[in-house]
Figure 1 (tube, rainbow, N blue to C red):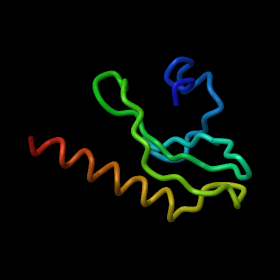
Figure 2: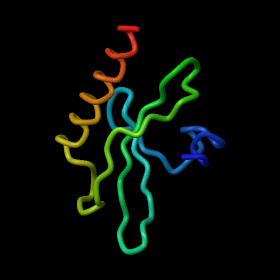
Figure 3: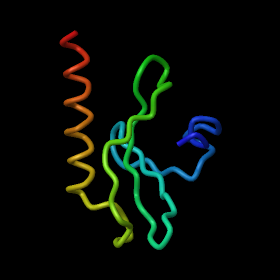
Figure 4: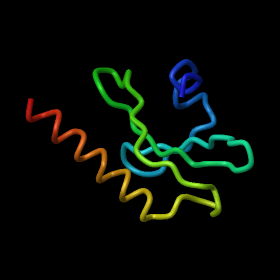
Length: 82
């Protein structure tokens, strides 16, 4: 995530999935994970991790993307209540 913040979404190994949801592949010790995240805050200075799944498929499944979108919507709704 530090590299994404430093290099930016366009210049990193990041894939845009849908709407505000992006994907980054993370190397684990014996497995690769897909981290679904979104930019938040003024000027997108916060990278909000929304879902982490093992990379077993060629692309993120729609259910994982929907869950990330739901979590982002919940995050944003709680922020508006303050």
